[in-house]
Image (cartoon, rainbow, N blue to C red; front, side, top):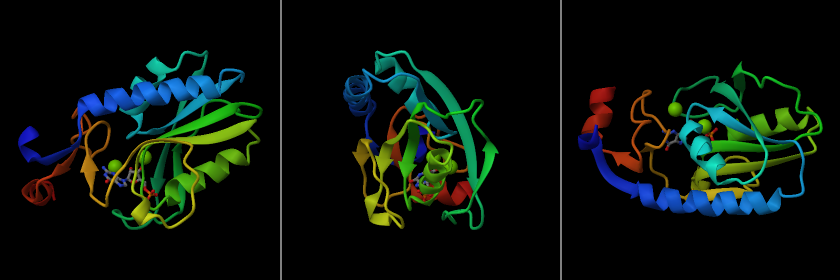
Length: 182
Ligand code: 5GP
Ligand code: MG
Ligand code: MG
């Protein structure tokens, strides 16, 4: 698996350091809030949310959603199908959506509006990675790990054809690996 990686973009140590910072900020910002619910977007955000919550020193709940974008496979269409919805009603809760990466922003924008319509007390966005150069809709990111250039990245939860999620860093694949996996 490691032999498929061309370059490590963000190391395990850099991720660890950033999660500590984010956890501290979230802890401060949500200190006086009740009913805090972190919503992880499956599957990419699983590693991120699991590590992040260990740095949040507050009582909180965790839930997950799984979504899939209709249409072309490599680009978001903006129309999102809910594969797994939240287990509970979020009315009156303080929601923090936890995503792996924002690219066009279409997926998250849809999710954000859908959750907002359920009348939470507040709703914010936390993403590990952001590719702002690819954005198609405006999104306010409240907590950001790293801004990255327009590369297709894998690792730390992010996949290529469902592989590479278990790499402990964020990396870029060699062209051969992309061809072979295709
Ligand atoms: P958006 O709707 O913002 O265009 O798409 C976001 C989703 O596309 C992410 O949650 C992720 O699943 C996928 N995605 C976007 N960019 C990348 C990338 O560089 N690597 C991987 N593995 N997935 C990506
Ligand atoms: Mg995602
Ligand atoms: Mg994927």
